[in-house]
Length: 142
Image (cartoon, rainbow, N blue to C red; front, side, top):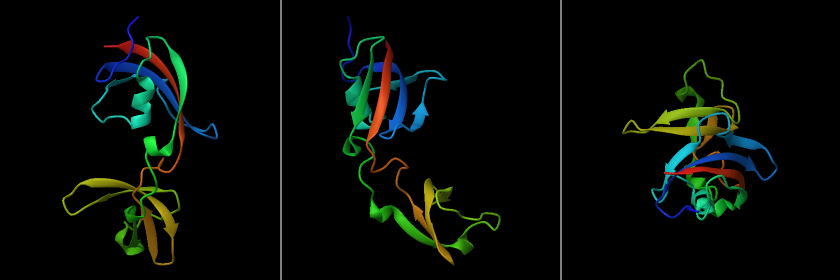
């Protein structure tokens, strides 16, 4: 029986959970994820978990934060004045915001702290610093 190798293209169903069991993403209610391995499209631990799986095989993997989104990067926090926000936005901790840099590229942020006149934005991935658990089911090797 054929098994997943490096650089294969696969279709996989997954459910991603935090170590406390909270689900943060799942493909079960939509088409399976189709991805070419070895292209840097997946976090390293997810890709490694697919290697040697056979079609219709199911397994659960735990991915250490170092093989997921890494450690919190303090340089991705920045303070901005509330006056830089549109008037209709009332910032709250955890709220997602999108900002643009000088080149016009968009970046997603989360509000980490709200102060009297300023807010602290966090540009880290929402799952940074966390170990992750994935239930995988290999649907197809293309």
